[in-house]
Each structure stands twice: as C-alpha cells, then as structure tokens.
Image (tube, rainbow, N blue to C red; front, side):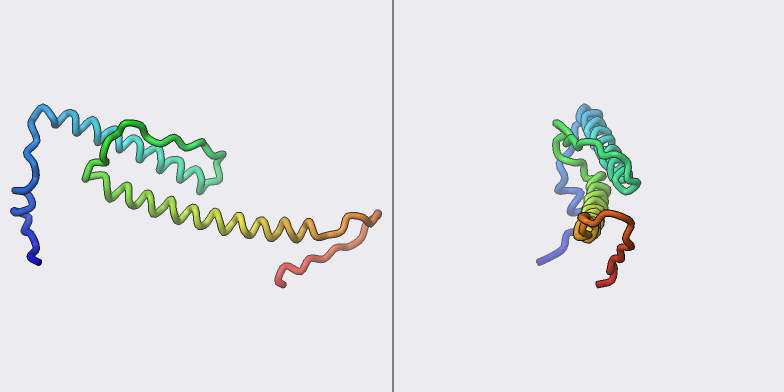
Length: 118
C-alpha cells in the first residue's frame, strides 16, 4: 500500500464553487455554535449546575472537517464525565444503603457507629 502525498490528496478533493463558500461557512458556524452549547453543558455538569435537557442539533448536515477534532475531544470529555458521574452515583448508593441499614425502631438518643471501611 502506498501513501498519498499532500499534493495527491489535494488533487483528489472536489473543487468548491465560489458560491458554495458562504454556505460552508454558515454550516461551520452552526456546528461551532452547537459544539459551544455542548461544551457549556458539559462544564455545567462538572460544576454541578442544574442539568438542562439535551436537545440534539437539528439539520446541521455533516460536521465540517475543521471541527471534527474539536468534536472528538468533546466526546472524549463527555465520556470521561459520564464515567465520573457513574462512580459518584455508585458511591452515593452505597452510602445511602448504609444509612438505611440503621434501625429506626429505638426511641431516644443512642449512639450509632458506621463502619465506613468495611
């Protein structure tokens, strides 16, 4: 298998009519705005801000080449945040189970000890 030189790749790219340039710029701007919104929502999740229901971008078409690396980084950050939030959820569930295991039937002040290590 031979590798293509940058000149070969540029020759294979379709030529873009000058009138298509504004349309591509508009698509790129729409995608950039959608990525900005998703990044803001991710930062909000990390800052424990009240979540905003996610609405997928509508009618953006394929993501422009120049934004693909940014979108990939955003996806990786989202997946990392999902894993972190799942860890927090599991830890919280274990703590809640420990609290619920304490009997409530006794009346009066009694010391209660939790084994947080075991």
